[in-house]
Length: 146
Image (cartoon, rainbow, N blue to C red):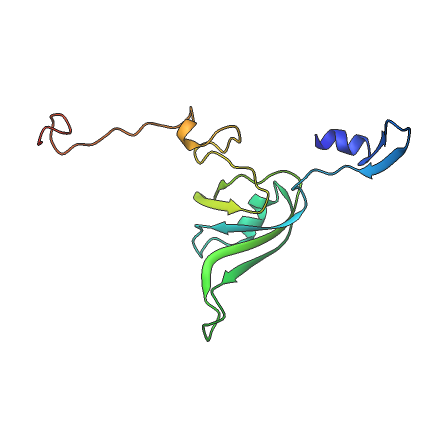
């Protein structure tokens, strides 16, 4: 889609039934400069590592720490970082950065599977999801104590 839009230079014309012609621009919805929130990252993970990872999805302009309410006397980090990025493609909801799984969210983000980041299904319908064996306290059936 990005290739098609770049070939037509983002402009298009439409001929109405009454032969009137309208001109307009074509852009990808949601692929713009946005504030992307990231959570679940340890403080030791540097902004440089985040910048390197997120730059695969667009041009990173700024990374800053979000702070708790102004009710506190001092600014207190809530361990969420805000990445301002001009998106060139959608950022998945979960990305590994230096071995740490981070959650990313922003307005207009497509819903993605927690397991494989695909946009055509969610976790409960994921074919790649590994089934975890059930562990019971007794070697008999799980309801043998009833």
